[in-house]
Amino acid sequence: MRQCISFLLLGLCLLAVLSGCKKETVVVEDNNSPYYDQIPDLLLENYVNRLYIDLIGREPLDTEMASETALLRTTNAAEETRLSIIRKLQTDTSFVAEDSSYRRAYIHWFYESVKGRFVEGASGAEIDEFIGPIQQTLTVILAADSVDWTQYYATLASLNRLILLKEAEYGLMEDTLSLPALTSIMLDNQVYDEINMGSFNFVRASFDNSLHRFPTESEFLEGFGMVEDGEFGTLLGQTSYGKQGFVEILTNSIECYQGWLIWTYRRMLQRDPSTEETSLLLQGLYQNGDITEIERHIMGGDEYAGF
Image (cartoon, rainbow, N blue to C red; front, side, top):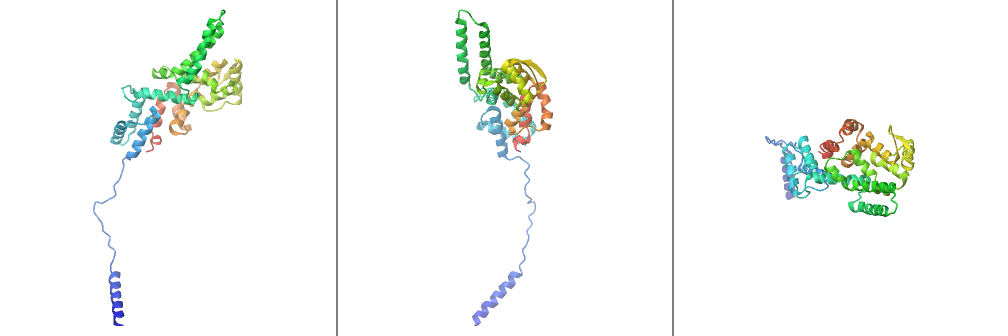
C-alpha cells in the first residue's frame, strides 16, 4: 500500500514540474531566409537547349551549353544577352566543326522546316525522282524529227521549278530569295502537285499552306478557274490568269506574310499570334521580309524562355 502511495506522489511531483515548463522562443540574429533573384541554372540550360534545337536543329554540345549558360548567368539572362545568342546562331559564319558554321546550320534547318510545311519534307533524293523522268522527256522531245517546242519549253519550265525547289537552300544562304519567291518555289512544282493532286486540292492546299486558312467560296471559284482553265481571276484585290498568276497573287499578298508570321509563332510557341502581336509585327515583316526579326522577337521573350 505504501509503495503505491509513493509512486502516486512521485507522479504528481513530475506533473507539477512539467506543467511549470514554458516553451521558449529562441531568436537568432542575422538569420533571415535568403532571397534568390537569379534564374535557376536548370531554366537557363532548358532555354539554351531550346534555342539550339529550334534554330539549328540540334542540341548544344557540352562546351556550347557551358558557355551560353555562363553568359546568361552573368547578366541574369538580360534581353540583350538572349538576343546576342540568337543572332549568333542565325548569322555567325565562323567555322564550327559540328555544322561548318552556325549560319549554315540555321539556313539548312530553316529550309528543311519550310519543306516540311509545304512538301512534306521531300528530300533531295525524292526531288531527284521527279527530275529524272523530266530530263528523259526533254531528251525524247529533242530527238524527234519535228521538235514540239511548245512542249519542250513547258517541260523545261517544270524541270527548272524542281531545280529551284532542290536548290532553294543556296538562295537562302546567299540572301537572294524573298519570302514571296520562296513560297512560290514551294507551291509551284511537281512534288507539290503530286501531294495535292487536281486543281480542287491544289487551290485549297495553297491557301492553307501559305495563308493558314482555306479560301472562301468566291476565292475558290476564282482560283479554280485560273488553275484549271487558265482563266483570268481576281483574288485578294489582284487580277491575273493561269496557275502561275494564281500563285503570284497568293504569294505576294500581305496575307502570305501573315501566314509566315503565324507559322513562326506556331513553330516557336505552339500558338497563333494575338491581334496585338499581329498589329505590332506584320507591317514590318511585309516591308522588310526579314523572318529572323520575328524569331528574335519571340525567342528573346520570357514566354518562350520560360523564365
